[in-house]
Length: 150
Image (cartoon, rainbow, N blue to C red; front, top):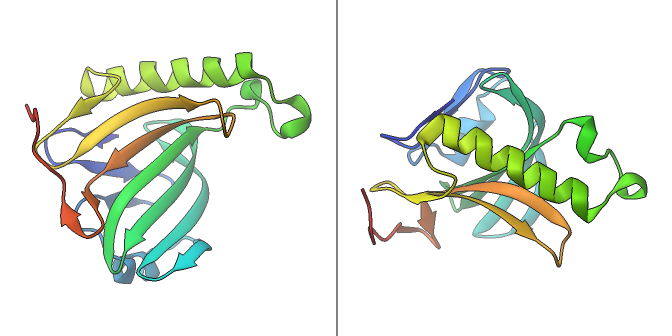
């Protein structure tokens, strides 16, 4: 579940609440085997693998700047969208994006929106061939701009 009023994402399969105040230190005390992805300090990302959020399966990646959680990336992991590059298709990724849009509308009322605490968006990137949801709290250690926040 995504609490749009404060930006917290509840991952029921761990269970843990992630949000603008979540830190790398806090990640080390959660009961999940986080796999380090990109390490280029102060940037560091971790894959949490497949997790259940609001009863849906998502691949979850956390992006940190120093100790601060900057963003969360979610990708719906249903097999209908393919399980490898062998069964990838643009049509499948666009269906995944539509699923993301629908899920976000159910959680927040919007597929993409700017809030006081950050922003949430759903996107398809044709260069990487992937669709994902991004929940952004900050940028390079700086609080997210409050442009158009509602």
